[in-house]
Length: 483
Image 1 (tube, one colour):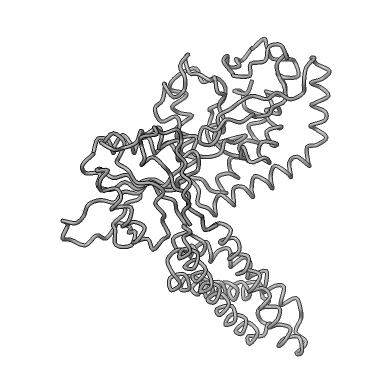
Image 2: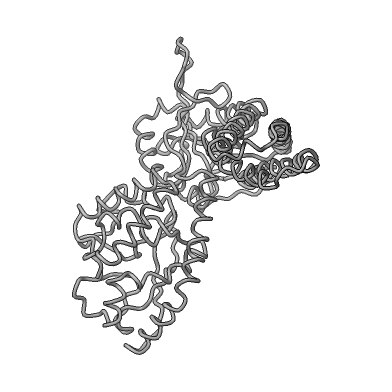
């Protein structure tokens, strides 16, 4: 339910339209995880029950059951991925579409199970009746779960909850409320409009800085721009700013006069909608990347614990001062956090705001520090930042608050610099394994680094992360740009 409390983000008191109305969320990612777990565990339990009731009395080998379950897990990953079974578009498409995808995935799963069975030669001794009964029962289970999903979603939406919180911007502020009502109605309650106003730069519009802060504060999931034909220049400026933050951006063009059918445009109900930008990671991908970060960081911390102790002792014996060095960095959506590193400089020469970048023969670096920096071992304490959720193992490197390029702040040198902050920063990244290490002492180096960071953000995948980690391990020994 929407509450009466508004979040104003320090907007002018006279600007009533600047208020953002709170809306309760449907915890979509929790539902997706619960559905996936219920799918896999349910189908596995069905396999065991059917095998126990039918095959065990006939003295079938239990190894056939485990071979079938192993094949099922492999085929489930393939089928759910190819069918987009847990993708947002399928899950929010209604019971019919949702069930269709589930049933097609199930057919594909058992097709792969049979294929693996013949290839691995365990299918010959397996009861066909068991496999057929298992497949039919799985069809029923998956279809029933998706009907339950659709019912629970409809019930939550009727109770005033929403899937997306949208901020609607219209070329004319007097038409903003009309469009917001249409959007809520046509989306069947999935989209809740938290505020509606004119496009920034038009009469009644709010400052674009206020809009960016609303996105960074996590109050808005989607920005919907409608009736923008009346404010083309303002809309172009707005879009260039929105590309710097992690938010879905949708245009609703005025196609009322168009007599031809629209084929390549998505819809919100009956409203044509063009998606121009999206959050870099979907809800499922956010969970996958976080799971990857926790698994890798905890595993590495356990494996290198003795090495961490040795490094700490070496730092203490080499020069006075603390073992760890904390420095403020810019993270996701410009949020400031303290990144941890092994101290590599003399304590009285530390530079917590990185006003002076480290050079190749920097006199501030200690003897042990030079070796640590050469092998990038000084970065290991950042695993703590990863576990705390402030960083990822792989991502754009977090820059210090005082970092400059040729004496100028980064944002002044490159207009699109903030776009690299749409994802959590990482210990290593695509830019680093492609030669962008060391000082940023030219505008061209900064442009290349930001370009590579944005490429990673737009093309993220678990396989790309793995490739970056492998290349990083190779660079630890052969990178001459580390100092």
